[in-house]
Image (cartoon, rainbow, N blue to C red):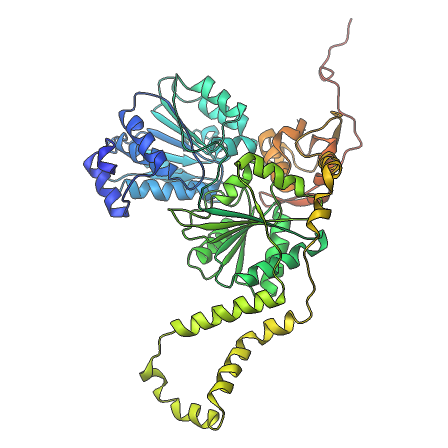
Length: 559
């Protein structure tokens, strides 16, 4: 099938041809004909990297009247990176339209500039929920003329605690509108949105839910916890031509891993929430241009990264939410290419591999951490390939030839070759000389059925059998623009816990309290005792105050 068979107008097809698109992906083939008619609400379930933006973006542009200055379309997405990527794609799709104004709206960037562009007449707004609500409250954005709302990566927005924000936004849009929802998974909260804000939607599912691309190899390496970073280094050295992503669970871990790698000479950049927008843009520019070969990122920060030819995705730690494994792995093997997804686990985490395997309905191959000999051999072959492929510029080196000849005269050709190889590889040979075996015993790691059960209980992942809560204090409140949704996002992003493990939240003018399932409270204490939120320092600690009883506040005395 060709794009011209999907009901798109000639000006849209012209933009498609300009972009070099040849054949539609499965989600595009199934979604575009439905969305082109604009007669139904729509739910599209497909994995990251399947072409969802074009699936909704092409008909979205087709239905927009760019001669009308009112805001007709709204795209809501979870992160600023994804917001910028969607905007870039929509601008490309609208290349042959008359003066389109498609405005990205997200935190961490100049709100004044966003306001200026919106007041010029924004045909389409692409936004993260928090900044959009801010602009709505300032009376800058008015949604009464919106005809179509797109919720992109709806499951991730809900995982990040945007439930209340999305409800607030959708309640301000007209009753008569089209809602197009795209998601990788369909948890009950996404179903709730579909039920409350959509009218008998068409539902299209591409592939199995939570499945991953068939052209991704899935592997895992097992080591003792103290050897995790050293195992990572060996894997990076074993793949000399790697162009990859390393996923960490928290911004602190992301910063620590990237700093260590950078100090040891790896071409690496980091992407996490503590960076300013300028720093994030600079990091992504280096990665896209391949000045940096490795990007270390949190799950949240990596949303919206659309970089071609990523060869490897490395899970420095597996995500606490197993579903995020598919989001992470989907960053490689795009556009029909192959890729490798690598998970690092310690000896007590084998049950997590089983959880992932059950979810993706595929097995992860146990692979041994490469030893010194394996790494040096790989580096040798990579060096030989570079030498063979290097073009010789006779004119450029002609003036230096007498010096080369004089210096190398009398040394046999074989010795010259060995000396050049040694110049390149001596550091590796020296570093790995006498290096030990980092592989943990796989059978010990399995620990038998009883040990697996004990580990999963002890970790407290995804459940709290006792129902007990721990109450925490955080030095952020209403004066620091803190609200319940923002607090959930901050806690979950930093500690790696799920939003359903957050309990009662009390927001006060200068501070707040929140409850966490007792089984995962240690993650909050160990990972976010302090930090920075919107350029304001904060600290987190266990609260000495007990949770106030419901209904006690404001209760009148009997007379």
